[in-house]
Length: 479
Image 1 (spheres, rainbow, N blue to C red):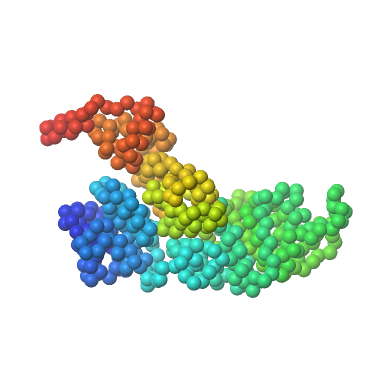
Image 2 (image 1 turned 135 degrees about the vertical axis):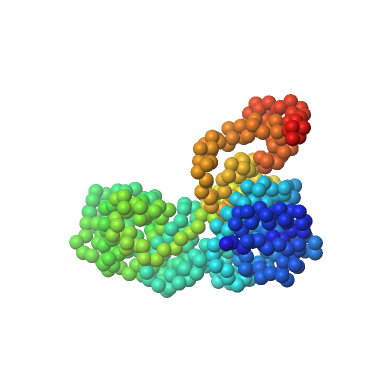
């Protein structure tokens, strides 16, 4: 049974939250202040700490640094967006606005606990953003558990000559990992040759990799060294190896097995000493089972795996990365210092980033170029915060959260497959008679002005004045 600590000075709220969590099979401990929570409990005994932001004596955010690896969920008032953003800057895993919906609270608790299953470790000093404090792993930034595991594996893998397979979605930084492995290997003073297998036409890939002799084919007016031979003594990085044609895969297999290559048109083989690093965003195991990739080659390159997590699963790293990229772009473009607005931070930490770090980097660069003042807003980043908030309302996961399986009872939800605009329209039409405009805006996560503008654009008529109050009055009289 998962253990949760509630830190809340309002007895009514604390009791109601305890009962809610206990009904959902959580073991709950209560405290009324930060000091009481620290003195009466071992914080690392808990799976989650839920704390109000404003507490007597010290704010709830003081628990973040004292909780070590235990995630801290901050409760704050709906209007305190700046406070919520500051909490996430300080390391809170998430925030939830009060008054909160019971379903939203349980969903948040389930997500956070599912995302933090790692065994407790002793609290470590805050990292500078590089791989574990003072150990610089060639510019790789990250403090989340998945990235710390990656850094540890790089340190163990780099000194060897074994073949490495880097796995990760497009834009996660696989080439940076490959460069880090090379720079921390005994071949660091030798050549690193990088090849994007998806960028070379199928008809040229073999000649590019293995080279050719003069007269081997039409247009071969001189002998040419291949990229594998050029990497002799150093490292060869084959990015997107899953796109390699079958013919080239067979030749590559011989190079890996025998440590030798033969130029196209040559009868002689050449010995080469090359460390191989491969990368792909595809599932090579499934691809091999379907016949799209040679199984024997897969087993040859799948010696040591390094897995890069997608940006959406990196939790607090996202904001640290955004601020680092912002400072880098400001310096590169010769701009005066800039900062992210609260709405920009909310957008960055809630958007799903399908293009991962590369998409974030380009969004920051675009925003720095287009922004004339010293504060970057979400609009300059190209993120529609209203649509992101509607996504959250529909049950889609926040950044750093994996979506929980839906219960079978909701699998036929008629709103499941609606577009965001259709969903917005239907939600407003179905609830405007029972909610005020303020309540509708709050539930949708937008301002009243944004709600009004969307009504105008989508042609959604407002209900008759006082309809919501009349509905409540009728319901009260009927009790």
